[in-house]
Amino acid sequence: MSDILKIGVLVSGSGSNLQAIIDRIEDGTLTAKVACVISNKADAYALERAKRHGIATHVLDHRSHAGREAYDAALVELLRSHGVQLVVLAGFMRIVTPVLLEAFPHAVMNIHPALLPAFPGLHAQHQSLQYGVKITGCTVHFVDEGTDTGPIIIQAAVPVMEDDTEDSLSARIQVEEHRIYPEAVRLFADGRLTINGRRVVIAPLEP
Image (cartoon, rainbow, N blue to C red; front, top):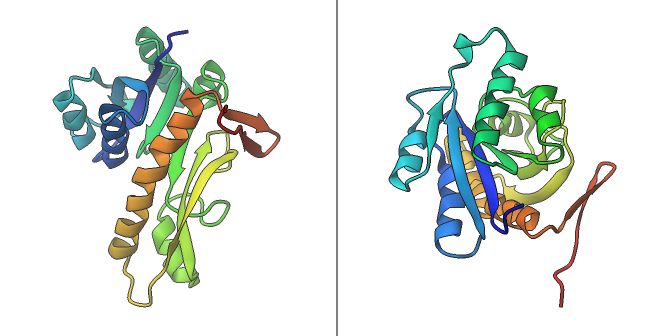
């Protein structure tokens, strides 16, 4: 295994979390390399972000594959061709299958804009506002076969204001996303994460 962790980032949209990870790599606070960025949508702005930093990009259209498993098998082949060790989902709007998860055991991460297990699935910010919670936030977790049910790595809390809209709440949550996602990748790169049942144990820094 290379000393520098190789990441494959899967995207469908603007890629602001991808950008946060790239920024931390470039400022030296995260020792890793984004080996490739793969999107299921050709017009995803995240691809432009990657190209600006000289990162290999691929468009893998899910509509050109027979089903989810066939699509994920093609993903695995691409990721392995770049030597990827950690798969990072950054606004990837597809449910992944065991084909991907078994190829990268305990090495697929996602970020969700709520404090899981509250408000899984789509439109978490809308769910938070509708429910009337006073605090929400974001969660980085390992991916399993459920929807936003994998073991939790890091969470950050964000207060809900009385006059919040989905847009204003999303913007404040995103600030925290951009902070904790690179941190979760750093902990993985440093070998400090262990999964114990449902718990992710973070080892202390060596003295």
